[in-house]
Image (tube, rainbow, N blue to C red; front, side, top):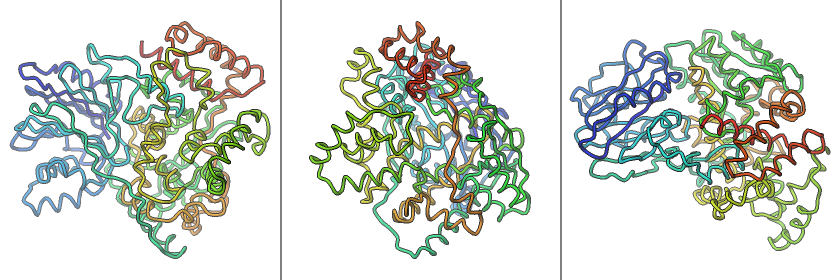
Length: 628
């Protein structure tokens, strides 16, 4: 795993700033502390930081072919590189190393831009063609590895992390109002936007090309996840095939020359990965987990159960429930406003894992692919109501109910129906956005200033969800929600969280559930195999029954929860108030400060629970403070 940076001068006669390339590269030192180097010629400068995983003795980057025409920098892992190498050797290519980097280089020499379609793995890379004065950028299908870029002063700059681009002298750092709206809705800034108007993310499954003769970046999508075709099997055959497909994905991800382990939370997904790895290995699996000093947040006993069953070399660490010392650092790790509070726990488990291994397997992705989130059950129940009642009837009944019904934060879940009534007055896509929004529309209306609303000019994050939904080619209503999640939440929240937290600790995390072959297979299985009788990940849980006990498979999902409400009424009460009512927040001009003060008063008095909104604001304030 590595970090890449680069700059491409589109105008002749302007030398590349080698010192800037070096500084951008050094800003990502944590992504590759083992080695670093750069390549500079008349038009382009490329930098690379290496975390050595495969072919430790060679495989240094930037990698240049023997003719000097092609130069490659690459971040990631290619899991089918040995098969591609064999194919390239039959075509006459002679390899000098044993690494996957050279396979991409020679694959590009053989197949051109279409090489990316043959790669199975997680990656972001750049190929410079010196003869054609042409640059190609590429990102993996699911967006596991990040890539940012900006076209500024007739120069294209790119990097694995935004912090490198922030070093560009004169870069326009005007805040993007669309990003503010997305952030306070979703908790992250969605692809292709960034917090800055001038900087973009390359989207998953995209390539970008430009040259001295074609100076406008050309974006191409090389892969699309299709739900159009469904396979029909018996329950037993679905379960057997899932184990086969997942075993293949995991086996391909195990290739490494450094210590490898696996996260083990005690949940279904990570436990399934550990169980299947154990069946392939003649050595004990190294596993790690973290827990909390409050029982309601702690899963370590479940993780230990799996560790004992599979005789893993297990390490666990208890994190205090008031472990908020990382909060100021999150803005540095993530570069953009980022509001998933589980990033704190994710950082700690990566920190623990890196003390034992260099590569760690993760169960991320299974919830999106196989409908594991609790919200899917609720949302499909809502959709049944929509399907039975005409839109006009639903709006006439549920819109007034949603407006009049009180917000009962303190009540049992079945009495907190306000959000459900509101969603039932909407169509499926709008209802889903409403369900997953951190701050609902009415909250954002109260929070955003007149100035920000004017800058937004009517933009709403619903537009993003509508655009994604328009690309969906299936017919199943559950699959539509999964597709939206894969295109937004998975890449913008989950994969971003893991990439930044792991790379901050110089740890490579691999996600076998997101092997694109496995992803394509899950898109072909019907909804009743994913969600049946209220049980999410049905086919995975049934397939894992021979491997995992029932108290792992069928207990309620916990996840990495953080006690925000308690923090904000306890040790963080005054620091929170000082941060959210600071001159920095007042002077930015984007918020109605009386709303923030009212939310603080209501929360800290115990009248209402505004912990989600207050955390989202706190992380935005942290970003503002560090970006000055």
